[in-house]
Image (spheres, rainbow, N blue to C red):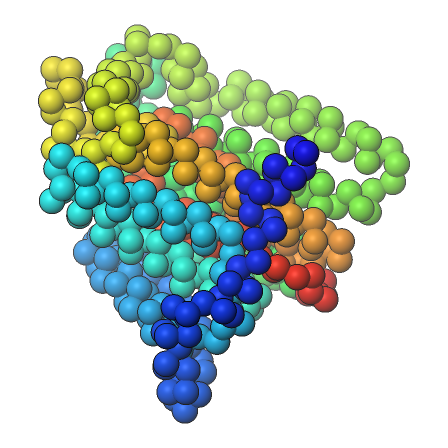
Length: 460
């Protein structure tokens, strides 16, 4: 009974490929298939799409959000072009289905928003991200293209991290008040690299740490593996030096998830002793590492202890006051919220804010979703997480049986999602395109492994 319920919730029994084969809509939209077969460029459509996506991730840390928006529009247009000329055999996934439902709830929230014009702006941004997800989920089905996109992001993040480390050694100007001036931590440099904000940089680097950790095992030959190991160390050091408390919590949670999934993936090779003791040893070792790191580094220790300082820390006090106001906003529109986007939030929040506590967002992804789309939207978001982790685990077990190296990217994507969700408890850096695109990339990575029928795979 419980198993059947879980299968239903995670849509494991949904035969989406069969639906598409008989879909009148897909048959109508397939008029461009013949044109595609005669085109010189469209047979290379996935490679061209990868080039556009790779350009987006290679430029994201350095360019304006306007240019990122233009590249997102290019991705959306190319997805439509490829979809119109698709064959019916190219199926959807359960993750696609829930993403579409989530977008539909946001569309309804926009239609019923008290600040509809502002909400439309947020809906457009969400739509561009969803279309990027759809294009990536298609392209990343091919292992070589999947590895290529991850490599582009990791090389870009390495440059970002090196610049961040340079700021630590040579100093960096504070672009905002990021530290309580009365705390022991006052005067400590917080690096921000090209992102302009240490919390945003931490959110950007969580996927970099997880994916570079996976690259140590996924990349062939010793030279790329050495580069991956160097990337792990540099990205991890830069993330820690942001001293972003939410980022540090996300890093610890994501790193622990990464190690647990790796141990589970390798457990087929373990003898009886390690099958029994690998997880306890991992938990103990990870806890000891975190405790020693916090104890040895005074700035890190001060930053971690400030998490438990309550309202006596100015940053904590600010967030608590914003959260109280946001909860009042949710109480007034609990069903479908005020509509998506920071523009809608900025139009409504001033009516609820406490004096001197202006905010651009809810400082919590989960509260932000509840504000934007009410409890219906929040429930659909949790459904999306359930389906994604459920499908990810299912595909990981399939790849585990043959010890496929492609499983390492799936492991890193799932661990990254854990880290970003924990970071998202106390921050909304997801709503910056440099980070939001990475979230949708992780969803696309998981979706790209979906198969409705078992396939014969090689370990490569």
